Length: 164
Image (cartoon, rainbow, N blue to C red):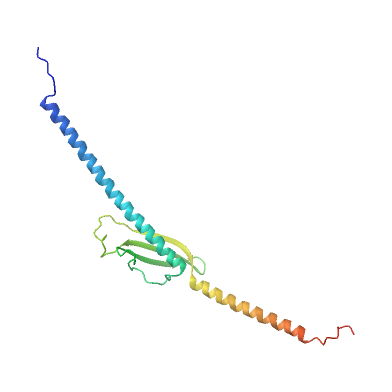
């Protein structure tokens, strides 16, 4: 009886086919992971740019009626858009800043659509200035009326002590 040591050709081919198939699956998973990592990196950049632009709006550097659709000065591959609407009470605005890849930038050919919109309620600076002007007028009127009453009581005294 002959005993065989080693593998037959059929076993080697089957093992090789399993190995090649698993390498193909693993390489596809790696490519998919790289693609998702790039997408999350772009999404994070969009979030950071939107928060930066919203901070400029809150600080008054960019007005609520300012231009939108401009590219960012520090990253021209991205552009932003501003949308405002009136709130439920006077002086309150719903402000939305959308950030997306520029049509002519390096991300224009990106196959993944990346866009981020940041929204918040914001007190309208024009309305705040109007309220400040009204408050200043009221304070001036109150100061004028108190100076008129205080000068009227001190001016009428004859200095005799009063009970005569």
